[in-house]
Length: 81
Image (cartoon, rainbow, N blue to C red):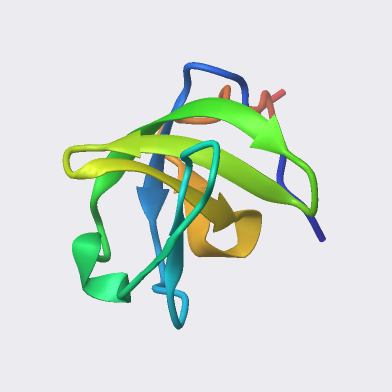
C-alpha cells in the first residue's frame, strides 16, 4: 500500500531504511543515521519507484512511503449524529 502526500506537506520519519539515497541528480547512498526517527521534513516531489523527495535539516533524501507518515491531522469525521 502506497501513501500519497501533497507536494509541500510535512511528513515524519516513522522507521529507518537500511540506507538512504540523496535526492541529488546523481543519488548517493548514505548511512541511515543522517536522519532520525521522528524527524520532520517537507515533501519536494514524487520520484519513480515509489520514492518521495523530502527536504530534512541535513539535506534532501529519497524515502519510500513505508518509512514516512503525514504530520497533518486528518479532517474530523462526523460520526456523531
